[in-house]
Length: 152
Image 1 (cartoon, one colour):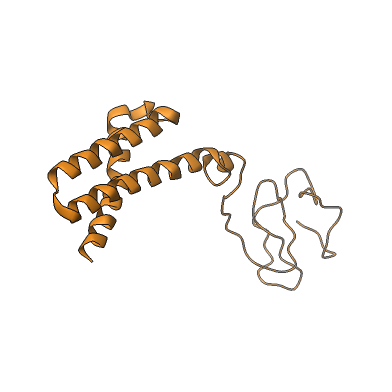
Image 2: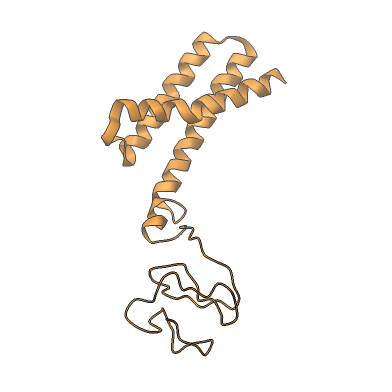
């Protein structure tokens, strides 16, 4: 149990400290492959230092945890930077949560600029929060008023 706690503590330290040190030393240059390599170098130095200071099986597990945490954090950073799950995807508009009221069926008032949906006739409140840009029924893919009433 002690070895497991040492491994987990090392992973926590390795996943956070090298990234903070890289950011402190490199500041604005902590991007791309320079940042990734600095994270890995910091992880290796930290794990080596921990193996020299902490002796015994727990110390060995702690330094292995630092290696695992640092490598995992670097891989997570690479995935976040270059995959659709990270900053590349957010530049494409993916992964952005938009607050909206929830009615069915849904018809967006202005799907390109707002998450607001048109409230069907007979529902309260009937106030349209975001009017459609470009005139009546200018929402994305709209061909006419779905509910038989005016949008605004």
